[in-house]
Length: 287
Image 1 (tube, rainbow, N blue to C red):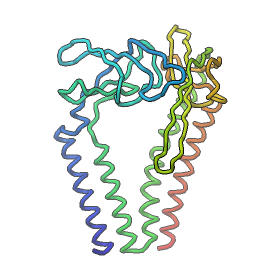
Image 2 (image 1 turned 180 degrees about the vertical axis):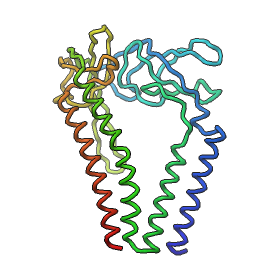
Image 3 (image 1 turned 45 degrees about the vertical axis):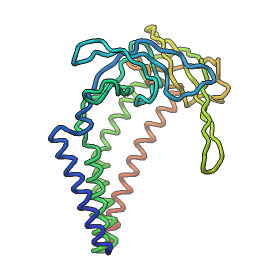
Image 4 (image 1 turned 30 degrees about the horizontal axis):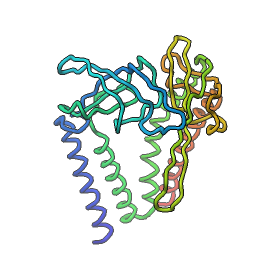
């Protein structure tokens, strides 16, 4: 089988996968559509033990209302339960989900999620079809078509998403400017040692745990992995914390660094858009 035949088969297979995925979505039988999405509320938080592991996240007790029976259900995040809870306080709303008819297989997410149509994999399959078509065009018509096919549509997509990136940056900067400031303390330093079985070495992950109380009286416990000098020796250290009153999970220890990060993300997005457009332009010029 030559390259032409292989690429045609590639596009056909992934095209069938994409069509099947969209068909399942229209029929309402994707995994996401068969998942019950709920909103839970944290009722109890246990501070991590100093020197312990960050595996499993911050231990919490969560309650939610079962839509079928109307009864209150109380669960914990022991074991593998979806997203790791890294910021917790009593009264915080988080997402709880489970397969339809299997409430015991619940999973957590850090924020409540809206029902999804389950189109992630079909969209990815379409992207693979697109890649195959670009390579097929390059093989059949000349490699400049690879520059046009990869640069042109992706440049358009990046340009379309650029205004949203700028709006998100502006919202984040506005939020940084209106943050409250309180004093917090590192109440634990977690240590996880991982052994690389292939190379025989080990790596150590250090995770300080920060505790602070908002001006509204909410006691927050959170993992903090950035902007703490010498984190391995941070236990008991007092830290200045900046947080948005509406969502203390968005706290930061360095507002200036966050501001520069947002500006850098927009700059990189612009440079990527220009690079993709230039790639397409070079391909067109070489035809």
